[in-house]
Length: 176
Image 1 (cartoon, rainbow, N blue to C red):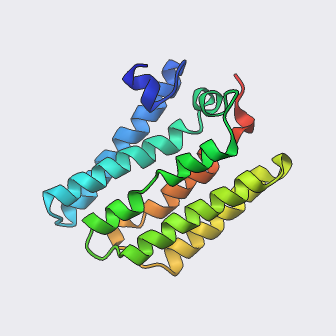
Image 2 (image 1 turned 180 degrees about the vertical axis):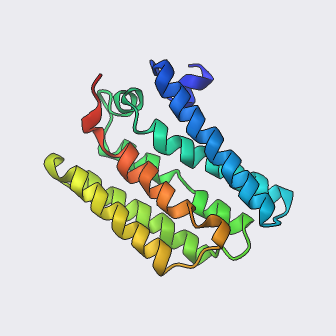
């Protein structure tokens, strides 16, 4: 499997590849510049930039037809999708790397994503889309009003939830 197939999806169209890498690069560049302006140590800038590349790109990539066909191919179950959400430990990476991003905030964001994923995968098929949107909007509301994150990371939880709950967990668009 090529790097593009791993990062985007097998059989991705040229447009899907351009959109996915374009969002990843533009998101990473935006957060890179903002992190430099925030006067962070260069290693912290690097961590935020890599996380941004993954989340901005992943939010777009996971919504593509190619990714839907790959992630929802025969044999894939709700456990595969929950595992995909569970491996996204970026909240804890930010708690390690970013002053003011606490471990309790990381745990809360991680729990919001996992609980949202559980709700979506447990919902009957006709209710998965509205359940995913409900989990995302309530998760964003909690993450941006109750939890405290450094200003430079205000983008993180909303984009993580869009990537995982809306882009990844909604299979019904898997058509070409």
